[in-house]
Amino acid sequence: MRSAAQLSEPVPGRGARGFPSMSSLTEKDRPIVQLLLKAGTCPRCILRFCCVGSQTLYRHPDKDLMKDLQDFLKKTRGEEDTVCLDVADPPCKRIRLEAAAEGPEDPNPNGALPQIPAVTDGNAAVESSAGRVCNVCLGILQEFCEPDFVKKVCQKVNSADYQFTSFVFSVSLPPQLSVRERAAWLGVKQEMRNLGLSLAKDDVVQLKEAYKWIIHPQLAEELGVPADGKSLFEVSVVFAHPETDEECRFLATACPDCFKPAKNKQSVFTRMAVMKALEKIKEEDFLKHFPCPPSSPKNLCDALDIQCNNGAVFVAGRYNKYSRNLPQTPWIIDGERKLESSVEELISEHLMAEFKADSFNFSSSGREDVDVRTLGNGRPFAIELVNPRRIHFTAEEMKRLQQAINNSSDKIQVRDLQLVTREAIGRMKEGEEEKTKTYSALIWTDRAIQREDIALLDDIKELKLDQKTPLRVLHRRPLAVRCRVIHTMSSEYIDEHHFRLHLKTQAGTYIKEFVHGDFGRTKPNIGSLLNRTADILELDVESVDVDWPPTLDN
Image (cartoon, rainbow, N blue to C red; front, top):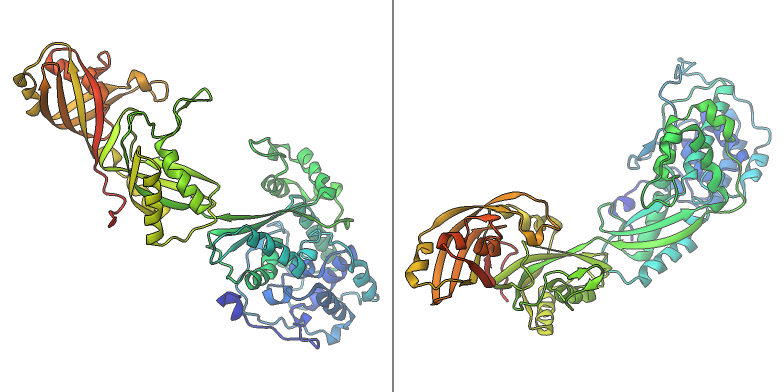
């Protein structure tokens, strides 16, 4: 299936075999065609160096393009149609290979072309290129444009069992291709200069772009979905050419600053580093180290890997935690697991299985300690599912998934489970410091209390605290003094050594430290307010006042 743009693409003039003729080439292109054919360049790369922007032309079989080039070279100058067809293809991206300062652009301002030597042996040039691996693209615009390779890619995609409605295609090319591209260009430039021809400021069509022009319609037809640059489903091919791997090394001597070791990089000769060096190296230095145009290799590129990747899917909801022996995330110290499970794992294991994802990232609006329960409407959370195979779920399927999570454990429950966008997750974190949270704390005092002793707490409003980073989290959080606010408190007398305190606080307040004082690191605290030693026995989160995600009818 072709995309709308591809279906509406106009078709240029056609030759006798029903394919577009070489009328896109002009007399000025003749020496370029002859030089590159003789050097072993494939027809499609020749079109690129002649700045041909017709997508349709690149899609025709290699052998037919070769025949068209042969016919073009056989024509005498008088027979040559020098009018370029106005093909309404989309504008292509370009790669500038010519230096900005090259002297006068046109030594013949009146438009007259200098005499170009007649082609005496066009067949010899064609024969030297036919059947050889292209000296520029290393076969990428040859064998890897054929239907057999397209079917191989599609078989890999289909066997991976992804859900997708469109695709974007990407290519990873060996870095030495950039070196060969530059060498071919310099060879062409030198030939044109010898003939007294100027070099217009036109640009060569990028190899990647030409390849996608050819591949996109074939992949779209075979997969049955359109190519879309904004698609979240990516099909990528990684090419390598071991035979020519050493061709970049001279650049490291000429431009050592461009090649510096980096983490997670097996080689310093990355495509970006090579491109940077090619921009920096002087033309005369390049010509000393590399043949222009480049020589033909013996072997084709290798398609090292065909990869598929779906954009992440995001699931949000709220969770309740009913256990006082369950951490929010896996509790592992020095490689040793302290508790067998966590809130994160109890939720994510079901999502991972249903979405068939590679991995996940869990986030939430704050976190509770391992011995703290989360009650009420629960705590908002979001999970990013990386590279999921399945991405489409109905509201009813999400309800069933939520029920499966809830049936699997009595330690947690989830609600309002739903698919959300990446942008929507930002609302969970927006203004987190300004949000309020409600707690219930069971408190013990060393000295006996009466109801009137704790009644003063009920009258305190907007109590400001200075909280130095608690000792219990100092190993993972920087030392600082944080100003926090207790908005309201309400006490509930139990007996002479116990009472329950309900608090509404600013998010980020350390409640345990507010009760016992943390050796004076939180001021004021319940102990100082009651003039006695106080400690916290139990703590529950009763509400997290974040209006997200949207409440569902569960």
